[in-house]
Image (cartoon, rainbow, N blue to C red; front, side, top):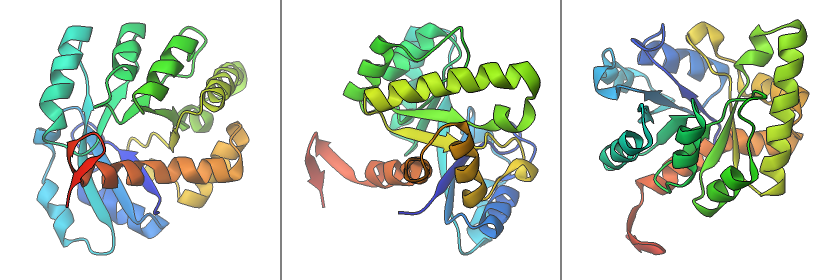
Length: 225
């Protein structure tokens, strides 16, 4: 299975989807997933069709101010997009995301105030929600903030291992200039605490989820061929 990176494109990022695709292709990615909060406002998404040699999928990042609004938006977007991401901005949002099987990826913050807890991990395991580890702070922080981030990162990783969760790694790229090659991203994940094979599987996970979501399921375990 191929390595996939989850990205934000203009106007929520600083590079267009086509520029991200060209850069990711050059770095060796077979595919990327564009996940904006407002995917219908992407700048010229059709331009990626002219870029050969890389798969570009369009998912969505689900954002809401309350649990009720988040549930409603997840239900509305699930039928339209094959990949849904939730960024864990509050404990309530994290809880709701882990309890919803329609969520593919929870980008859990690595800080001491909102650690990955037992209840959250159990819910994520039950609903097959992958846990995202954003490596952007490892590249951009220094000194004591980086040390605190690494401590929280490794604590979350231990919980993910204990409860057999599926981790996903990302560079958290804000533009095409922030993208890292699969080899570099795996090496960064190893510095943060991942095992080599564990990091490779984490970078493959989005592509696997995308493939599963594109299949037509009539009910749990029953696929329409």
